[in-house]
Length: 552
Ligand SMILES: [Zn+2]
Ligand SMILES: [Zn+2]
Image 1 (cartoon, rainbow, N blue to C red):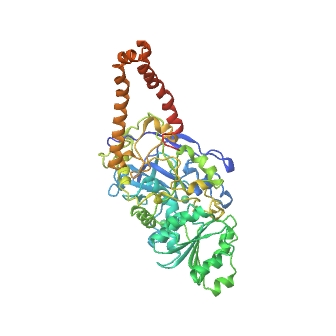
Image 2 (image 1 turned 180 degrees about the vertical axis):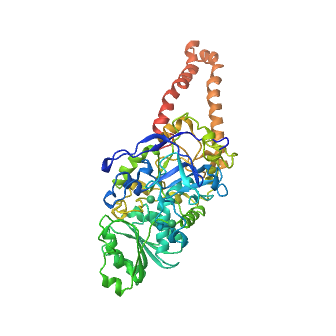
């Protein structure tokens, strides 16, 4: 492990209680060290998926799906960060400082039929799932199977990589499963939602023609901005199927059902042309509904109904590549590890904009350093010190290199995906994006700098930062002319202030004579000015903080 400082203890959001009232407050837990085939990832950002919400609250207990003891109560399966320790068998593949992503499928056996067929390891019966059958990413450090960990490419920031590990790849794979070819029509109900806004961008990048369905004009604006060719507002359109037929003549080639509602499944087949494909993604609580269309419709139109769930290691790699190339950017609601409960509540209320990502807070100081000799994994590359800004900075720099097309990329909205049964989150057609989200950015905590920030880390909500390297409000990005104008006016202001106070002082004597007043009275010309100079800042200083410095 060389010079690397890996603490013995870490902060993690740990599930407490069970059922609806369960919480996941931050606690101090042991840092687990990687085994020979594993790596240790220092998590920078982790997505909060609807599945995490469901697992923490035992929503799937009736299906026999509940967090196993091995998780130690730590959920999370959308982690992104840097490698800080490498098991001895993984050194040919990973080194410290490498960027790594942890996803729902945490590990597979590598030997069964599904692992060996090259395309379907998601169905490995021996798979291990992050936050379900092993410790998840709601912690500062997370052990990961070195064989199955995703490498995050350059040009993708950690906060964007996190949600792509599950939500993004789910939308991407669903688009692929639709088998809609470039130039053909795909219908995306709930297109302004957490999965939908991903799907619009992927479908667009894949050359499909998109009919977005959602509620309200603002969602429409958002969908069109993200790449939809047509928008159907379900709040004002009576017959959506007729509208789709009007646009496409014979119906669409594919429809992605991301909404977890029986209605969404019931209506989907009606939007399709003969030979079209329904892709089932959303997971309604009603287990009896399977594309609720009459069989005669499926038969006569020779429709396909296919299911889709997350993605393979290769799928995730492809999904990330779209972001690296500047084609797909999630809308993010940013918080910290302490916000798990708060965001779960918002999610349940359908009020969480975009995909939620949580920054790992390194607030608690002075963890006891682990005795490096006891570590099971001697460090492969001691040149990158752990916990030093170096590793983080490299991630940060790579992010800064990301090809941001414009602010649009960071937008969009709402519901969340879940790879398991019975999620209630997928109801974007119910209008789950608050109005405030439809603006350009939906971030609640804006910050792109990964470097430790000392005290500020304890109060990340107070941290105000620039919106990436291209933020036009960053003085470094001002035009040269504007910089000179500001510099000049500041210089002139100082000149005027000092000039005005001193120029009169030499004239006190002549003024007293000219107007036949006492010298004391004549001095008022200077002293009144200076009084304003003294008391003005007492008022204008706080006022500028309270009301801002710009004209309303
Ligand atoms: Zn997920
Ligand atoms: Zn297997």
